[in-house]
Amino acid sequence: MTPDTKNIFSDAGNITKFALRFFIELFKPPYEIKEFIRQCFRTGYKSLPLVAITGFIMGLVLTLQSRPTLAGFGAESWLPGMVALSLIREIAPVITALICAGNIASGIAAELGSMKVTEQIDAMEVSAINPYKYLAVTRILATTLMIPILVFFADLVGVFGGYVGMNIHSDISFMRYVDKVFESLDFVDILPATIKTFFFGFVIGLIGCYKGFTAANGTESVGKAANSAVVSASLTIFIIDMLAVQITDLFF
Amino acid sequence: MKPDPSTQDNPVIEIKGLYKSFGENNDVLKGIDLTVKKTENLVLLGKSGSGKSVIIKCIAGLIEADKGEIKVFDTSIFDITNAKLNEIRLRIGFLFQSSALYDSMSVRENLAFPLARHSKELTEEEINLTIEKELENVGLAEAIDKMPSELSGGMRKRIGLARTLILKPEIILYDEPTTGLDSITSREISELILSIQKKNKTSSIIITHDMACAKLTGDRLLILKDGVICAEGSYDALEKGEDKWVRSFFV
Image: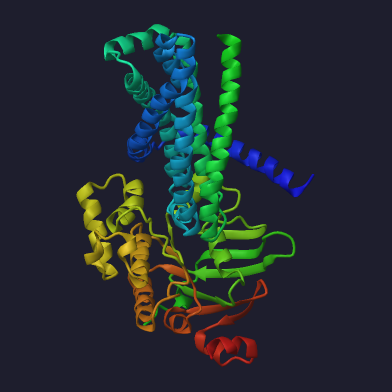
């Protein structure tokens, strides 16, 4: 086995152990409620502008790009439904998760990595404070719960972006547009897409924390941890998405 | 006057045959034996990379040793539960070389962080009073609402020391407390270490390359060479000893 392959397997093993520890520590008191709320604010609220802009552009661009093809078939009236379905089932969850992987996972990895390098994590440990519980559990839980909310928000803004896109070339009232969107949506479009966003959130927090906690000594490793967190989280998001689509296909 | 260690013979730290290696052919500690008596300041000297910090990190349970025994307050810290280890950690203070202040927290929050967690009976007002008192002890009451990025190296060390002292530890492990500081600030920190020992009756291990600090604070000095302790004694005895290599530390 080459050293690179060995590293991949040992990394996979270590990250699994790291994830298992999350579930063990999650239910053990004391609960770091204050820090969890602070992390929800940081990961959720502070990502809103970024997600809003991305969501709006996604909806607008998707509408403008799809319009000529549908117009060729005389099926322009399907545009709101098609845009909403594409956004809610696939584009908004994946793009939002990727944006958050770039923004949140790298931020967590850099923050925890620099705490590791400057011995702040060790300082917590010698003060008999569990750094995993205080730093990792709160962040992973916050991303797991905030990413679905951000995706929901991106869905709404994206659908609105679609409305703006529609009105560039035609004139449709907002109520009529919303009506058409809801007409084409079903419960099965929303449920699997929502469930997978929890997994996206979980891996964003998990990989960010893991890379930060395992950063080597030296300031260079902080940059490496942040970079590696973005790459690993983005790749994992695509893999989860592929699995989620396959599973959804089987059941619905 | 330093307290006379001979009257305080109970070892609070006892290390026997401690081994630690980091990968193949990188044996850092090769059988360390040392004891720290109650209210004693033990200074560890040695070249960079000789494993001094590894010893105190093993004592605090931050690094797992390969072989040997470490007893703190008569309890072996190997093979004990995390809860038990944390109980011992609460009685040990650790001043890191980099001070390790939490960058995202103000000085007040840095000190309140361990205190609020481990002294749940204290009200917010009592916590604030304790923080103010501890900062006054290190002479930095005015820095209470500053962020660590606004502090100088010497101030960071003092705040780090205040954070270490706030839990009233019985043992303090100092990792190069005066490194990177000018000679005046170094002396102030060394005097602070000494006054803490007198006032709080603490036992300490002080790792330093600063011989003025070693002279001022150390009741006993140990010198590490190639992973073992090669010399032990008072500052004066080692300075006048026969070993040329040992004497070279005092030049």
